[in-house]
Length: 237
Image (tube, rainbow, N blue to C red; front, side):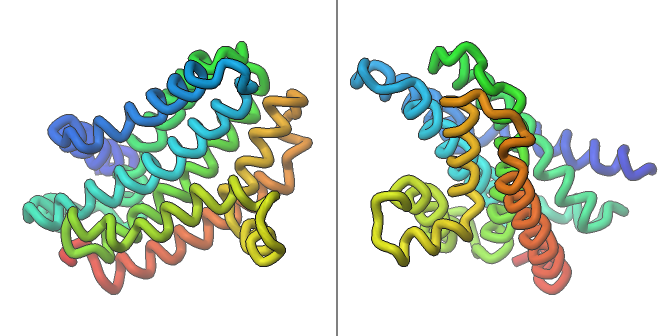
């Protein structure tokens, strides 16, 4: 079996599993609901603000929550043996399990842009930044899933990280200096900077090259950490 075939097999398994988990399906609906809510309860709000919040919520909560819950569920229900007995390498399992979440996030991000009514301004930059930041969040979510004993404990393990990545970037500019300093090390803060420049000034990827590179580097570091934890801990928990 080729590398692509093994990754595809893991991807198909993820599609079958995610359809049976209503909690995960609800999580995909939340960014859409929140973006619609912001647009309707505050008509005077700039579309870029509502869209930025919706995209950030999508990337952090869906990007981390979905893979962490999927891994924890497999460990809890003892269905992970299918992957453990397969010839797939750790990297192939990680790619296959994260690919569905990545593709679905990009699809929902496109939908949010239509809902916010920004007429797809900065589409390329936004989708590129969303994809790279989602990869970071997905890898981090997988680490949470590996460290959690079951589905319930994913919230305990992951919630501090969720809140840090979601709230800190939004208050960085108005918070004290330590908060601003910490935010500079968060990929989601750089993601918000990219969204701001793309939505308000139609900036292209070249104008956000440093932020994109920072997020990509962060994704690589988290991926290496994920591989290490996978090899020493495995998926059995």
